[in-house]
Image 1: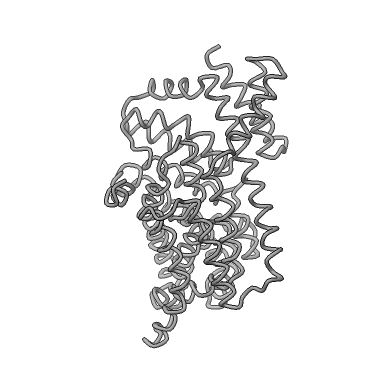
Image 2: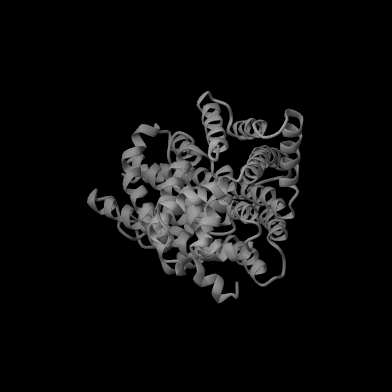
Length: 431
């Protein structure tokens, strides 16, 4: 009977997903079904409801709707276009320069907005037509945009790192934000290497060099947008404000910037708020049900059983981390990032900490794993958005995606086994 509850939880969850039940409801129902084998029906329902409510009762979670709102404002506020112009000045003159521009712009916009979907939509909507016009294939342009958009989930500020902090029991958000910089940049550089190779092989055009005066003007135009990163992250690291307070400051800053750019007007605000509310509702429902499932797993001793099973296979840190990476890569294919982090952090974190792995480092590794999943069918949200923006079918994008996937996996392996890439910056700042 030791693994009976695990079987019930997994089977009920998989069956519900297979018949088309939305993932948030699948998580909640599977949790209740598992509880019914341990306690009576009324306590099962009330306990899950209570755990869902208490799971959302967190000050840190207030940062998520604020960062979502800031991302929506940036998506409409002309910030994406200015970052693209800045990226052109930086890398546009290199062979395959527009591919580099796409990647760098996605890294910058994704980092500022904290949303891979927003980056894929905003940057892809502008860059895809330009790249196609310059002779790049539509499938290659879409593939570059889709994969590079995920870097913003690692480079701070990142909503998913806030979720990991909650799931891990309070790992410092500031430390996680600092830890995400070098891995996110490393993934971006890996994507650039692959994109550059294919640009060279296919003889894609080289961008023109811009005059120094034009470059300087473009840089000045981008400074207000780039300053947001300094204000938000600098304030958190310096202890001036918390991550939640920083998210509210990000909203005020982006609203002022958007109005100064004259890209939005007061009549656009209700629509932006409504879209933010819709996105936040979905995220919070996922978090609530996932917290309920996390409690069920803890009640049924599932993390301890999984930990014992993994360590019985091998106590070698390299082997165990390889197994966890493979599991998370598969999980990312079938599950959205937020519930995956909330469900699997309590399972795997005790295993890796027993092996001496820093929880901050593991958080970055977990998020990088799941970043690859959001680019893959059947539930890859960034894949669907990127293909929709590029007006291309998923089947046509898969082939150019594969080498980019390989680059992301290679970067993941290096980051997994070289902890200093993630931990150096937090240590420099005393975390």
